[in-house]
Length: 175
Image 1: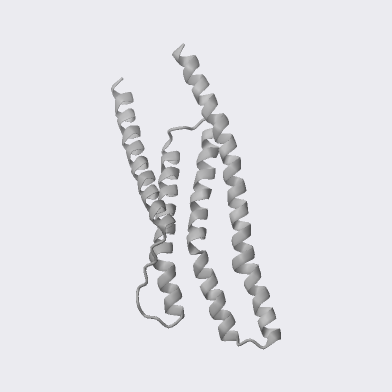
Image 2: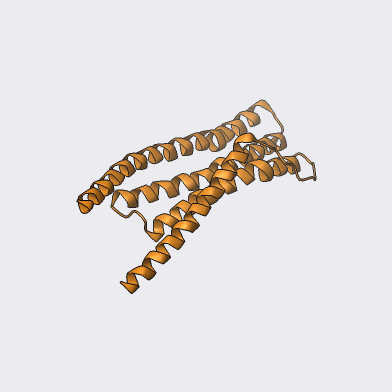
């Protein structure tokens, strides 16, 4: 009976993972499309229009630089979305507590931490430096503070799962 329950549980995880993998694929494509349009296509259009309207090239380039720096947190989150997509792909194939999935969870957490730090310190400071300010700027975005804490939680969970896998491997050697 426990084998049937275990099999049913794995089938449920595989089914849910397949749905989540699709959601993460849509999220990845959507965010990539928004970032491409907002931070690549639109700046190119702006350069062309600025050149036609007589806007100073330096002002246009500064604005494009600020725009690209603003995209950094979202680009870093794209890495986490990609890691989740790959992990759910492995789970769909029946690979649940594998070292690769543990690494995927750690990668998701790391990308969340990196994106939050980029939003809190890196992006504001770089934007200030482009404008001529030489200080380190800290922008206390409430969502970024929450994301860094969640990212830390995921990296800790990955560490615990790594230890659990090591303990399981040791127990399997004994038995």
